[in-house]
Amino acid sequence: MPDSYERLVAKLKRAHLLGTVSGLLAWDEQVNLPPDSIDQRSEQMALVAELQHAAAADPDIGALLAELEAQSLLSDIVSEEEARRVVVREARRDYDRLVRLPADFVAERARHVSLAYHAWVGARKAGDFAAFAPFLEKHLALARQEAELMGWGDRPYDYALDKHDPGMTAVTITVLFSELKTGLLPLVRAIEASPVKAPAGLFNDFPVEGQRTLLTEIATAMGFNFRRGRIDVSPHPFCEGCGADIRMTTRFDTDNPLDAIFSAIHETGHGLYEQGLPLAHLGTPLGQPVGMGVHESQSRLWENQVARSRAFWVRFEPRLRELFPGRLAGVSKEQLHLAMNAVEPTLIRTEADEIHYNLHVMLRFELERRLFAGELTVAGLPAAWNALSQELLGLTPPDDRLGVLQDVHWSGGAFGYFPSYCLGNMIAAQFWAVVGKVLPGLEADFEKGDFSRLLGWLRKNIHEQGRRYDTRALVRHVTGEELTPQYLLSYLRDRYAPLYLA
Ligand code: ZN
Image (cartoon, rainbow, N blue to C red; front, side, top):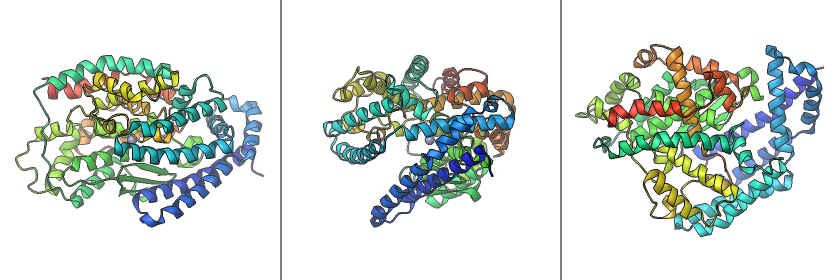
């Protein structure tokens, strides 16, 4: 007879496996699904989601958790015992979040997500925020109600943040962001005023086949295991971790090969994290990522710190020129490097460079914080958006399509999600500072296309930890310091000041 812990793990794995089926169906919907098959796919997804919810909310899990929590030996910190303690602690967190939400609330919210998404698509097309406003109001009310049901009624926004990045609060993020803003704005303004501009229009007619070859070679060099994953094409690049099977996508534009390449590198960073989670613990919290911010730190570290560096392109620039003969004749190494590190303010978050991106996130965080604090109404959102956009980006959107209606997140009620992107940048830079100390000579590795020492370090210190630590505790564990924006600031200064302000 398996013991209680083994029975718990078997039940967690079953629920997780059903989740991987959902992931695969979702990936397939974006990549392969014939248009007229969408109705059946919706039914398939709803059915699997129902089965998965039932498996994860199985009352036996609750009973086993209560039994294991009562066993005092679980407080001992011995390797195997500690692993069990983490699984029980995190499984409790997940289980409570599932069973505390009544089925009718979950169904109502799911219906509203679908309605609000379609309302947002229409409102964005028409540039008509008022048409979307009632749906956003309802999402806010549902988010408050959810927090209430979960026992966070007095701190609904903290609950939303904690869902994406365990342990994070609005106060913590406010402090981090204001410190980052103080350091970042002078750098941003100086670069914007610089006479140096990244060259535009370098890339014309770069066939898709060559782009596909190059990004596959890069992902392979980074250490992505194609026997346990794939890269395909979808309108919006993403990485779907289906357990032991990682599905990533990119997109191709013959006049913008850097978009495909950097998107693929970003998603490969996510994919490497998923592939590095300990397989032995797959399906339990020890085989799962910490949260969005840490996930994003893994994609951005590869995309920015690694792939925008000179050393990286010592290896791959010759391949770029070789795969696209004649296309870059007359373009110098220096011009290419500047094009890969272009800095230009834009109204659209998804088009922002790695410096301005942080300002886009701060804007959204500040508005969410005010909405939840009751300092701002939904009706007042467009004006508040435009004012903050002017303050942070120096740009006022000419209409709401390029402003408050640009992102899909709020249509899904995904409050508390945006900060993860900027936290990911901070965490990546803080990890990177440690990497610089403990792995000397890494640039020489990169110049040869060898990323194994870096990946080994990420595996051991971050990927293999699963959910042992929450976001801030992981940063403390890896870097010996609290999360701070100072590493991001010095990384950005070191990279961009020599290019634009020399
Ligand atoms: Zn990402």
